[in-house]
Figure 1 (cartoon, rainbow, N blue to C red):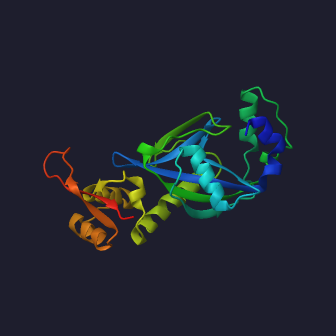
Figure 2: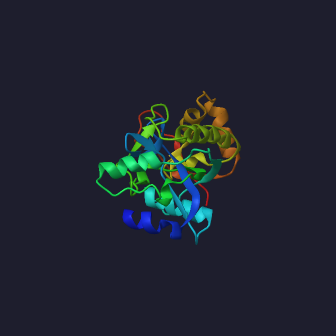
Figure 3: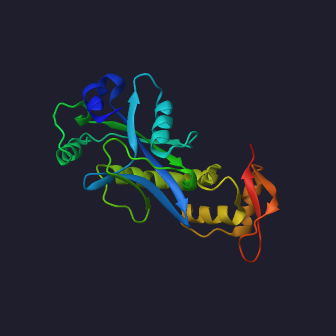
Length: 236
């Protein structure tokens, strides 16, 4: 939907005062990364609005598709964020002034928005980030080197990182950050990165294999010097 139509007719298409923000998490070269969009002088999380005709989960899938081009993305509900002053009116005004567009204070997007935050784990190699209608750029950032962010997006990201730590201790989900075929040393290193602590490799591998959720592949990984560990994939 083009910007003019969003501004003039969006209130007829989307639920009022309710939005979705996504902490899209990737993993590359031993580093956890977060996908961000540039809005004016600062950065924001990818997000969007909920159509009047769709469920919240449907909106999350649609927005993830629009921002990553992934057709079957992983996602989990994180939390609700709704400070009394939570709106982007000044940020949108800056965008409009910069691009020579007409600005009106009564646009529906200027109102306070409560957001339903989710986090998503993606394989960066198969993710193709796309900026939104109001965004000037899209870029991956390390969790440890985030730029200046608008509103409460820093808090949302920190909440997602902490939740990922807790969730990774209780359920199998981190494989979403890796290629479909991976080695146990790769999965072990990923967990150490997420938890920010050392894990006994042998004990970790035994724990993972004991779940019965991983299938060992007949081929060996040949592209690394030294030992060639087996590759695995998640059982369907």
